Image (cartoon, rainbow, N blue to C red):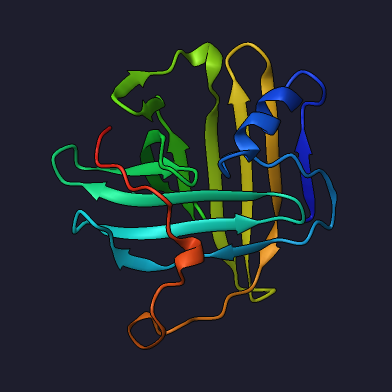
Length: 183
């Protein structure tokens, strides 16, 4: 990534907490090495699922997206144990790129399934498109807090290689340790 940043001391405790289950990234800097692994598969509930595992030098941010036909929207389960669930709004920008906006987050831990207050969360906006000129995908992520403003983000570019999932399977390393069906 060309740049990975956060809002500094005010958010570092939250970033450190999120790191424990691969939810937030505490790395910062310029020209930060980055790898993203996306694999489609059917999860243990039979849902079409896509992994989004982003690996930075010290951190990893895991998410699995599923389509919820009852709600007509994509849900993002964050972390190794899918204990944060977030509905997503997807749209297309003027370049033909994908724009993802996160909705209200829910904590799913044991029997708990509670909506987290806005003061304890952030709203993410992800913009991704293919740059024909460079032959690379470009991505920009910004997370904002309702009181603190912009608290975390990264932007840069990456190339892709495609793996035949039917032939090679989905690596266990990109699957969550626990799957969740609640929102």
